[in-house]
Amino acid sequence: MHDAVIIALASPVLIGIYKDGELIEEIRDDGMSSDVLAVIFEQLIKKYVFSHFIYAKGPGSFMGIKVTYLFLKTLSITLKIPLLASDAFFFNENRPIKAVGKLYFVKNSDTICLEPLDAPSTGIFTLPERIDIKKFDTDNLPYYGIDAVG
Image (cartoon, rainbow, N blue to C red; front, side, top):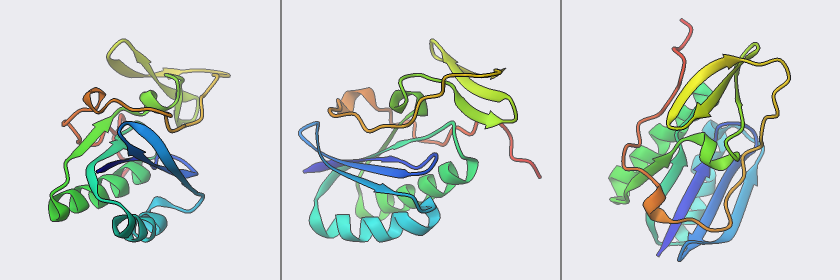
């Protein structure tokens, strides 16, 4: 059995395949999550048997979060594979994440908030070499952080 970790909050979309908690395959695609997730997973589901899907639930690109959640939730339900999640800070060394303008999401302890920052040291998203499934949460609802502008 394998676990898939999906980070689709910015470009590139990152997908890691894990066996016994160890990264065995990394997929990077510069396309939009709405264009690439179905194509990538069509091949992955033929190649692997999954025990969990894990995704970065935000904050990050509002549309990236939404598309990824809907896609993975649908797969989770139809294939009966649990969907787990973590906030995006798990995948960028807890660095600020761009929101809008000079506003950035920052995480202090367990609280995510917006702060104005002039020149933050933002981290890129990366797949960990090892994962512990117990560190991911069944609370998999997206975290948008700010309301959609309508």
